[in-house]
Image (cartoon, rainbow, N blue to C red; front, side, top):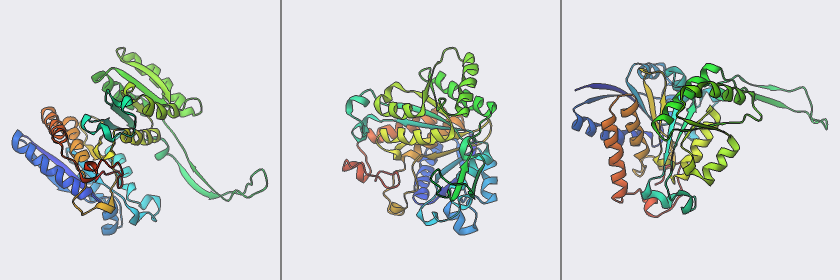
Length: 358
């Protein structure tokens, strides 16, 4: 029997509900497999701001750095929207990613056959299913670049004062690009051996560097078919021919946007898990793609399946329990095939609250 230490960060809104349900499922997994999961709760996000004034208290980061894996619910909500950027709940996510060295975010967008009618796409576009893996660089790019805000002394062409100016800088190094590309290539080898690099190389110097590094790295993966796609085209192809895409690797900002779009074509981002990984042997962080949905918190109607599927990724990638991960994913499929749905799914209504079908 093996023991695994899991730091659970419930967060805000429905986060405590979906993590509680997931921990109950993991307890059942432990019971059947003979393993033991040691859960330790920690605060981050809005609740941590209310309690400590800090979206990511030092003790939370320390717990996360000294465990086998981190399970996160969701953070944020309108209550904290007026705070400055470095004090908002979302700053906890950036701090955890940086503090844990989580440079690769894996988001799986799968259209379950039982939920095909929930997809906003025409039936003929999804008749063969959708199974896309988006590998997003997580600790570089514009989200972590230099930024600033200042009063400009310049004017527009017609003499109008420019007023305040803001800037956010996108920066990538060869080393940052290569390590995320290798995650993408490795994932492609294990899937359909097809990799799409999404960029904006017709405009951005950073994207041209991505292409240069890709051309060098792909020689180590001769079995993988590689193509390049501008991000605007990629956003269209996700809607026009989603079944033609398999593994997408891209920058922080582009991955953020495209992964949410991919989530919507599956009918519900309330079903989508994610894994954030760093170097081997370091704890990964696992969380649902959806938001905190504060409007339905406490009503007992939130959908925990995305968090449960995130736990399956945790079992596979961080704990090395592939058999248990397979069983958990099969259990989710059986729940769907047996006809269980959240209330709004039962009414075949695609509206969602903060990304959670209810």
